Length: 121
Image (tube, one colour):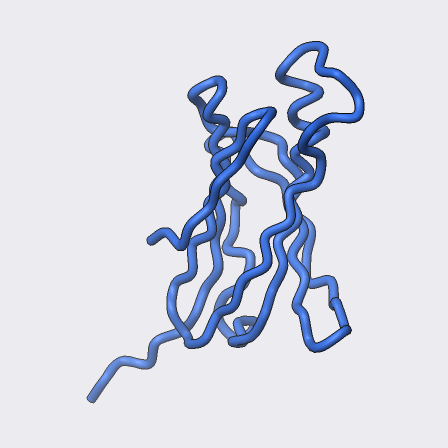
């Protein structure tokens, strides 16, 4: 008998300019349904740049379209000294889809002038 697989969503933020995890970044998760944007949760990254709990898991996990908003500007202002205002990056928004019950890991690699993401494991 196959084991029932449950989905979960996690994230991790790394500061590539300082070469360390990005602690204290606000993370907001939204579910997108057509024109509707439903707030799911707000979290904060810990000293390892991760959220203490999965953003979605178990019965809360549903396939669909989602949006993660990282409050990168607040973090960059705290850690990078004086940066010209307005910042090049402030809120970093990542829209993505989850098609099945699996582990979706959406990391953010961040610097004051660029970012990247991918589906991690």
